[in-house]
Image (cartoon, rainbow, N blue to C red):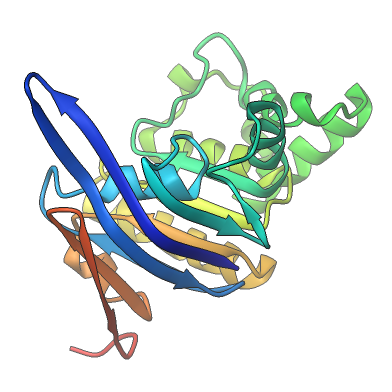
Length: 229
């Protein structure tokens, strides 16, 4: 479970101080699903970075399973990210010279697994996203939707408890957007993941039971009936 208490993030912009997050309190239960929305520059990606341990707050606590990510030594924080948190980004972030299989295996290297186990788990992850027959292809030989599927396999191959996605369909057309969301939703349910996604797309936001709207660093939560008009 995530518990954020009084999370504030300040940045210097010239002579000014910008509060990207301003006293955020937020709880996300294990297996929960949350969409984060808001205007550009409102703090959406900053909040996701806090949840992923990619940045630290200026003030406040970001507690995951009883451990405050804000105060962990860097080595331990890196280990938490490697073991517990999977990331999916808008830009796929695949290594162009590595095959789909090799890109997925990169997520397992920090865990110290033997090569044979890395190959087996990466292959299984690619099958789970419908790309078992494309494991030997380079990213440039795959469509945008297929590249995002590889990125999702890479995020999930380490069997994390948390999946964080930052505009995962932002580079896809409408039909592929829906395919990728159906895939993510299915994997969320199947694996019991805690799933948090940033999106500008209100159509996708309506598919989630909870929406966090962030404006000027402050968060409000809305509960909704999934599929309601």
